[in-house]
Length: 151
View (cartoon, rainbow, N blue to C red):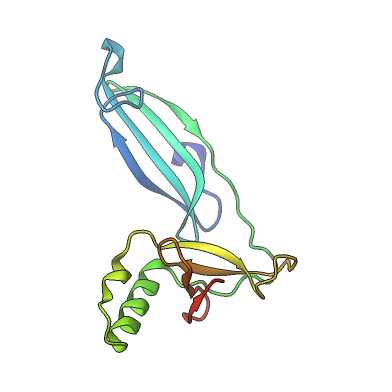
């Protein structure tokens, strides 16, 4: 990526997929298709975004692809630190153990970051980040680590 200059501030690229053909397939289907496809996802402050870079490597010397990167700007007032997924999983596991429960829920791959209306009122414009546990309704507040329930 140095060919295109530095990445936007506070962003990075995370390799998410390698495929064994130069056209994005699992295996080459044509003579020209020998190579690899590399798919990167852009991160901002270590969170994955919807922006990607796809590189098609044909043979040893031909490279093509698409680059869809963005610059990100925090919404004013949203600079509070958000707990990352690893921190939340550790916090949840400890909470479950303290309650005498199995901490298997902390390893559930369905945990994901969402934004809920801060006061439960959809007419409100204030949103707060929470880590949803599976399909919900349980969550962990991404600022405080407090366990909550939506609805």
